[in-house]
Length: 222
Image 1 (cartoon, rainbow, N blue to C red):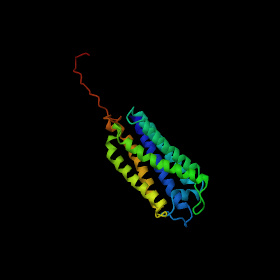
Image 2 (cartoon, helix red, strand yellow):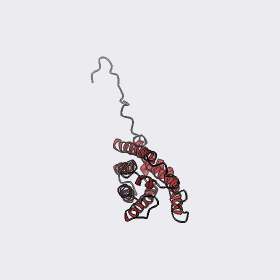
Image 3 (cartoon, one colour):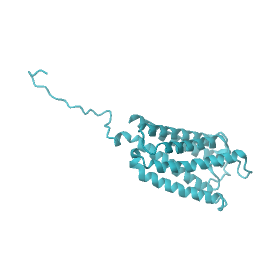
């Protein structure tokens, strides 16, 4: 399905752009910010409306492209639940990009709580979607990888929750970045599978001519 392949390529491009913008956002902020002790949101609020916020929007749009590709493959089950979970991930990313958290070391505001819980919804929705996606026939080649990434992301989410509460934010920035990397890997795995949809379905490349030429004998009319 060329349309599905195209959505996979578009999603991979969006994921790559989002990753690049996030790296740039980390390099542009104040040198006093510690990436191991502070979250990505702490970096983003120091550069409000900057490239990290744009990266979250781009990642949300890449997910929409994936979702469109998944719908084009047909009524694979589970379908509705995956759409709702990916929709929650997209919504969480967009809200987190638009509503800032508080500056590091300051009291939590209403906006900061909205940002926090939007992020929590996104971080929990994507692993659940990944686990369900592993059950789809069209993603069977990536099922084992998806399940492994989901288990890893849940372990990292648990580590982040421990750090945020009883752990006194010990290495919370590291835990969050590893969690984000793992969850984005879930999206990239689905996108890569979509780009190989034609090959998996046995559709030959468009440039190969498989026609059979039958020579005509002289003196024989068709």
